Amino acid sequence: MDLKETLSTLESLADEKVRKQHLKIGARENLFGVKMGDIRTLAKKIKTDHALALELWKTENIDARMLAILILNPKELSATEIEQMVSSEQFTWAADWFYNYIIKEYADKEQFREKWMNAKDVMLARAGWSLTSGRIARDSEGINIPAILERIESELAQAAPEVQWTMNSALVQIGIHHPIYREKVLAIAEKLGVYRDYPVSKGCTSPFAPSWINAMLSKQK
Image (tube, rainbow, N blue to C red; front, top):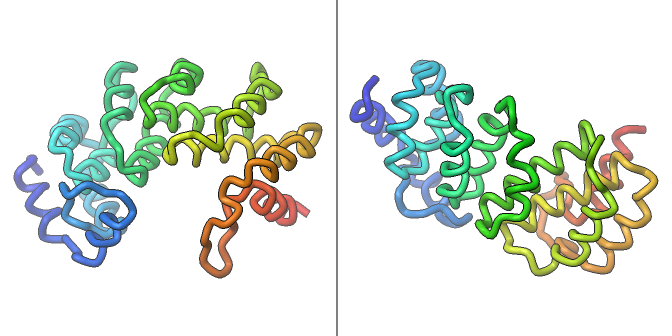
């Protein structure tokens, strides 16, 4: 499929309810509103097509970018390209797809972590904290957790919403995976109160750190 045919196919799959939902949660107007399942089905049909993916990304259309993420080859992206792509996507749903399918699969992703955590660009900072959260959960060797907690305590409450979410995730992962710091984590969370009153659907876990941590620890028992 070429670019024109792919965009035409995406447009034909548009669902107005999906479009309105995306707009409600912060998407820009440049989107069709394609269901995630339909994007995945189309990606399976196309398979990996790096050149097409780059063309789709340049359109800045959200559905096109989410399809691009699924057909990109991370190994063919340079560090500079990845950084530019991260900073160029403001819709957090698409940004998180890019993190999960591209950044996490990038061999040398550690080069980005501290650099992005200290970036002024909110989307780079969001991704940097996601990488830190992952390291804390899976392999925290070399991570200065007391310093991370100090930053979270001083910055979380005033952080941009995009960054606040992944910074809070890092706090939660410390509380779950590092019992020695759990009391400190819970104290920070209670003091700051970030997401304390966050609305959640029945059966879902609150992003408020103490609730999230306790829910995960209960599952481990």
